[in-house]
Each structure stands twice: as structure tokens, then as C-alpha cells.
Image 1 (cartoon, rainbow, N blue to C red):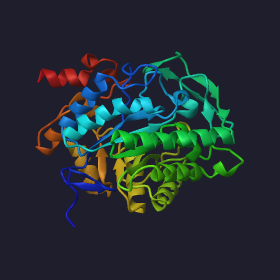
Image 2 (cartoon, rainbow, N blue to C red):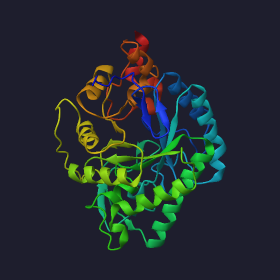
Image 3 (cartoon, rainbow, N blue to C red):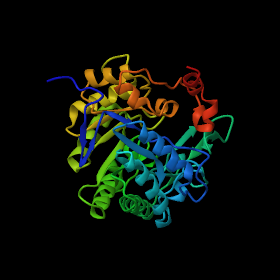
Length: 363
């Protein structure tokens, strides 16, 4: 069998991506207001990314509940009033011939507001942020507010309603945010989820959300999840991936799990990041498309991942912010601009401050 190339199409549920380049979800701080409404920037931003020719775009983490926002300027989908604005994003991206999924999100213990909801009685230390900026100079210790069964039911319905609204807005599918220390990730990590009820079974809530969204959308609507490979170990990530595949989810966008509760040991090419090696191992174990992410900045890196593993898609994030034409250039054999790895993404603060973009414009 010939090796998979970056320009090859791939089927994800009912959707065909014309190539193996996905623009993954990246929150655009400083744009949406406290009500989480779409503004012209979002339409322009996603139109420009789509014009660059990716196979798929996954829209930034869009919150199912005001209390669950990681930042007060995060896009929302907790109200029917959000649907018209979100529909404008979808229509703009579709006009460029690109499918778009929406990421459904709740930050849980990582939320910026007063309520730090968590599956169990868990304390963590981290640097909270709001509007893309740290709220404290030093890490703070936060004790999560353990979710009651009524809270779980309410949040489950919030995810289901978010899926329904995404379908109403015309998205081709949704991605449940189940990694990066956020709420569903907290359920999936047994070091964080110390409940003593049925939701100690990490996959139960996701199963109920999946079934609920499927019941209120069409059979063609794609449902997948962003999944931590190490939750806390790779063996747990693989077990979750297999169960989610059997459950009926249609793709796995694999990244890191709960910060501080991960063993990043994974086989594979040491030139690949831990997340990419984790995605590769998971892709070997399941039959649905698996996406790889983390530091993929050049076409050569993306091609190597596709050639050496059985992952289906490569996520190109910050480099596509630097150069929205990254997909077109990569597929044409040209050298696109790339992210230079600022510890805090300068593009999302102000594109004019992005060193990668300044270097690209100077050429």
C-alpha cells in the first residue's frame, strides 16, 4: 500500500476532508464579549483560514455554560441567541469549500470564574488566566467544587443542547473537548475523578452526551472527541479510545490530558512529540480517524508523521495563524511561514507582535 500523503483526501464520518491538514481549535482571546457572541472578527478569521485550503477546520473551544468558560471573552453556545452569529461563521467557511466542526467546551476546575467545578474532591496548583493573561504571578492552589448528581445532569444537558445548537447553525459536526485539563478530561483521569457514584465510570458521561447529541441531530452530523493520550498513562488513553470507538464516536483528536497527572511514556520516533507518539499508538488500536497534534510546523514534519504512523490527520495550529496559506503552500511544495514557539502566543495578543509573522512578511 502506498504511504499516505498530505494531499490525500480522508473520510471522517459523513464528511470528506480534501487533504490531511486540520486547523485545530485555538481560542481567540480579546474578541468575544462577556455574552460569548460572535463578532465580525470571528467570521473574518475563519474565512481567511478556510481560504488557505485546509481539509478541515475545528472551531475554537465554544463554551456550553457561562460558568465553564476558561476566559470571560470565550465564544459561547449556551443560548439559542448564539446560533445566528455562529451560523455566519459556518456559511463563510462553507463558501470556501471547507467543512467545519465546533468544539464543545467546559473548563471545570480550570474555569476563570468563582465556581471551580470538578468531578471529585480534587486540589490542583496552576496559573489561572483570563482574557489570555495570567491572573497571578505565581501558581495558585485551587480546590474543586465536587459536582452533585444534579450538577452532572445539568452539564450533560448543556453539552447536548450545545450539540443541538451547533447542528442548527449548520456545522458539519462537533468535537467534545476531553483533554487539556478541562471538565471531560477531569472525568477521564482516574487520579482526578474520585467519585463514588456511577460517574466514577469516566466514559458514562461521555456516552450519555454522545447519545443525547445523536438523538437531537441528523445521522450525518459528525461527533468526535479531543482526547488525552495519557490519562494518566498511555494504556488508559488507548482503553478510552477503544471504548469511544465502540460507542460510535467518529474521530479522535489526540493531545495531552490533565496537567500534572500524566505519564508521558510512549513508543515511537523520538523526533515526534509525546502527543504525536500517543496519537500514533492510539491510531494502531482503533478503526476510526485519529488526528495528531503538537508542534507540527513544517510540511516535512506533517509528511513524516503520515508516513511513519497510521494517523489520519495532522493538526497545524499556530503555524496556520502565522501563515493562513500554510495548507496551499505545503501542498504546492512551497515553504510556508511557521510558528517560532513563543511561550505565550503573541499572535493571539496582537498579530503584529508575532515574530513568525514579521519574519514571513519580511521575505
